[in-house]
Image (tube, rainbow, N blue to C red; front, side, top):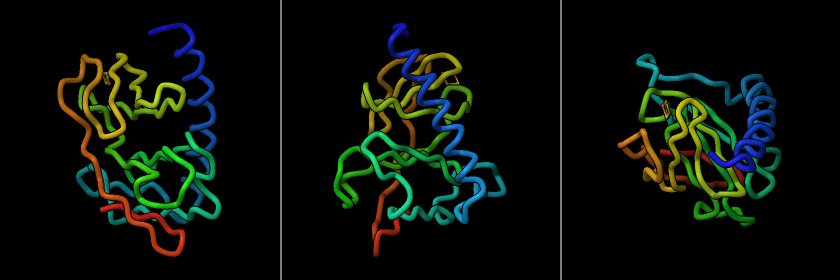
Length: 139
Ligand code: FES
């Protein structure tokens, strides 16, 4: 990984850790399904207070949701399984590179979950984003 990307990730990771703490205290919580898999039915993101800036992301119920553009339509977001398909580490969104990065071994994924760099060989599951009254849900 390039030094620049690494340093950017550190900043993003710190922000994500804070966001994760806040998210875990919010009503969205982090309820994985009983099997430990992502639980899309439990994701509810209030766009009035979360994901306000392009590049913001949250991990909720095993799903990582990132804002890709400034609007509030489903196309302005992406929602993927937050678990790297290599060995299950939680991934991060790197806005400056417009990709998802796994800090464990360096796998990278596109915004639709395709593998850009291994060791992961399988794509991340992508979920459908819906928005009603500024509440983002996934299915
Ligand atoms: S767990 Fe993600 S690259 Fe290994």
